[in-house]
Length: 203
Length: 329
Image 1 (cartoon, each protein chain N blue to C red):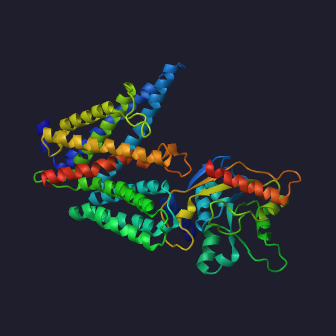
Image 2 (image 1 turned 30 degrees about the vertical axis):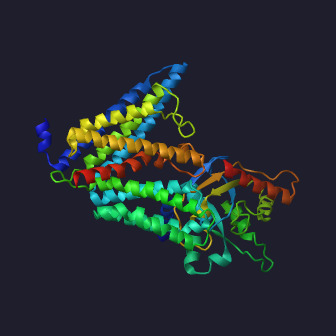
Image 3 (image 1 turned 180 degrees about the vertical axis):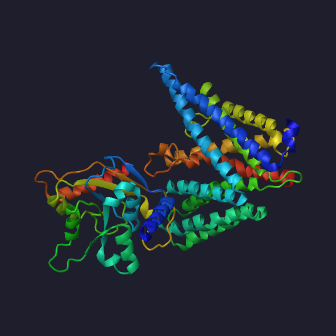
């Protein structure tokens, strides 16, 4: 109940501030198992994609959250689990467990994911080179559809270090899905994925 | 009939006005609907007619939206009407800022603009501090915003960024705030009928713009400033402004002005509105966009709210001050 109210409040707030418009350029909003990957500029990115998805997709799509940051306080933990239904990942490799294991579990259960392959927030015009997670995920689950997304303008809403957001219209552009080609190398695939995201900026 | 109308209370008169406006809109909508039902085939003439009907339908949709918004604002009382216009100004400013590139150093100034300046300006309107509300943005905010920006320690393109922000605040917040201010004006023998003044202003300006647009399309002439607007020429502008003025003179009955005065006020409003629209056109061209909204498919997600209200944002302050200073309200 509280989670529902909080999610409605966050939705309203993000729409009031940024509009959170979704532009389904390359594919329709279908309820199939997908991995959305996007550029990462601020904390508001995850809320932005989440708000841009239609109601039916929002329930089955889980963003990933860095475990060390988002479990620090009970409030943060509650928000990421109850409201966003996030998947926690360890950013630092500790122990023998594959850091991507929680993602594998989620995909096995049939959930869709939202990931930011840059790994961390950037503040340059272009996204940084993608890390290997996306490649590993698609190798293990080849039938999951990979959808690139470009989150526009959101770095102006709340730049690093600021607390109060500025109302600026933002949009999320979803592009055509990409697939891992036969025998494609990891670096080549990740660069191609990155270019797919950047290409959506000018659409 | 006239006597009957004059004997109604102010509230009943404004309600009657809304009934007439809704009725007219409904009639026009019905006509357009019936016209669009007719099968015309595929000739190029039919294409043109169908295009015009689609345009008419889009115009009707926005007209319905505007009239309903005004009606809700008026029916809910002065406070709600002012809050409603504050929200409209918020969304318009949001659109304006989205398409004006800002830098990291502008963040504090932007926060100030949206969350301090805008509420204060509209609070000044609601509490009828008309003298302070006139100078708050041009004097105090004009000084304060660049100071905050200077303290943010980023001199790159400083003048340009601050000028853009001040412009945005002037057009979206200052201009828009004069519409509810009109609602709250009181004249010696004529009070609580501010809604008529707003209606007068909006109707006259929109009709003038519409006539100008239609005339420039029907009798095309070389554009005066082709880099800014392909359709603007002095002839169509003059006809549009004159039509608006005559219409204003005809509507003088609902205003506290005599017909001659109403015509003069309408002339001022039309000139300000149409010239303001041209200025915003130039701004949009500079930014490289044809419209702030671009039919809702632009990358920013802007819906074109600013396109609809920009003439009003320019006309309202000029009209408000002309009325206030000339009539001493």
